[in-house]
Length: 118
Image (cartoon, rainbow, N blue to C red; front, side, top):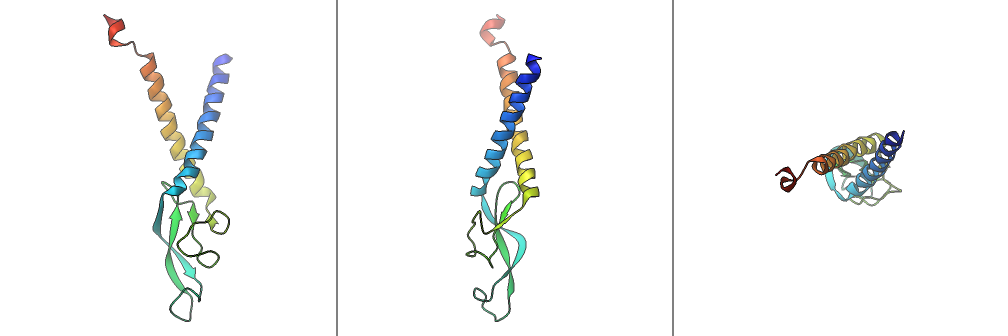
């Protein structure tokens, strides 16, 4: 019973850490293949034109710049497009990374040290 509580708390803690790391990954910004229509005010032609959009998040961009609503090439949480599916994939990626780190640490702690073997 106690082991299942510890595992549930570890799982919940890993999930919170993974979501925080996915949120922090918005620092990683890059122009992607996604095309967005840019408004007439920002385009050199009188008709709207498609431009490559800036994305934020790692490994998948979950915030995508919408140049018609916000300043082009700047990510804003409120006015740009939030992609829930990509955020979920990012969270799962960071969950796997954090879970692997916890597993590795637990394995290292479980091993007897060289001085104890002798």
